[in-house]
Length: 90
Image (cartoon, rainbow, N blue to C red; front, side, top):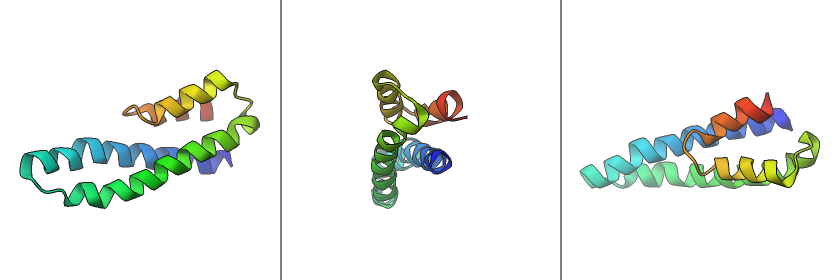
């Protein structure tokens, strides 16, 4: 389960960065929202999967509620999931 969570964490982080730094600027600078539409749904699914897996894996990883909170907050901070992978999942 941990390795699956690491994969989802990586994919969620990459999709978030693509959405923030590629798709959103294209939307507002060029007026083309197609990239946001294309990346938004996969990112949303990966985000929800990340949250569910974090809650499920909490017991396996012996995380307290504070650690779980940090893991969940990191999903909305750019590069946060990469920090979680390095600090808590390796």
